[in-house]
Length: 336
Ligand code: AMP
Ligand code: TRP
Image 1: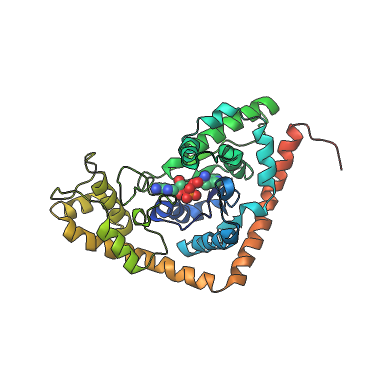
Image 2 (image 1 turned 90 degrees about the vertical axis):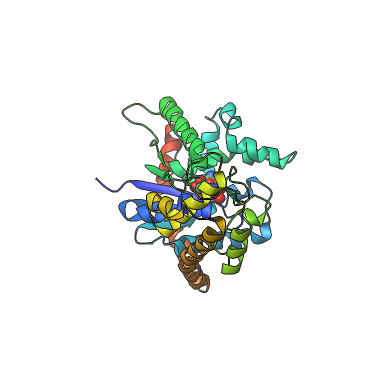
């Protein structure tokens, strides 16, 4: 049997932060040699909320470079840009026509984002999860490594597959494969530095709420210095009254590579004044190699372009036949 296939993606909106890294990309990197991997920069998703055309291309390069900088290895993984493979848009249309509207209206992320957009909610924002389903299904992906917030979208993808197979396939010959989410417990939900009950997010208006992978040591120091804490002495995990404490200890645990038990013992008698410099140092040191590699990759634009060009070819070689299979199942059979 061949390797299982993995697909995942990140939107080119703003900078990547520690939530994106710990919830998603770090897991892609760790598992990549076991699987056949496709990682896309989902630039079609980026326009579901108002966007700036002048920065879209640069943001897309930046995310692709960050994939490489975080350790995605082209020996095991393909990196490509979603809009380069037109099958994503085309399958989205076909899936749209079998996805009930009320499935989309129920999506938590849609409801949250729609509130923020006010009057300006596009049809694309509602349809976002169907495009995500197309991303996954075009590659017959077995596994989709994401943060906790994307679980509902993968469940929707599974519901779409079941419906499509039921209507247009047969139990022996399903048209599309059922994917599974791959969500790690630790780091699946990194919280905001300014409010430990909200997830760290690219769209939070406050820069102080997140640490970006490309933040300078000074910025990291400033953000940790000013992050929200509590007045209780001694640090502990899993106290629901102390969400900030749990979040900061978890960040320290993952980035230091220590176990939870070791960190719990190390920090139980510490005050914030002692812990914050330790966390600052750990974050700066773990981001340093990523930042160095990022600078190297960005210095050679033609290399990055060649990675994406090749990625596109490899992605199309998988996606186009699967799109054809779906079209045939739906009855598109007139030869050209
Ligand atoms: P996005 O920035 O929305 O494109 O998200 C890209 C990936 O990062 C997805 O797999 C998300 O689930 C993950 N992610 C985003 N924010 C967080 C967070 N605060 N904690 C953990 N994972 C996250
Ligand atoms: N919706 C995902 C997010 O914002 C990004 C995404 C788009 C994705 N297509 C995907 C993730 C396919 C996994 C698989 O986090």
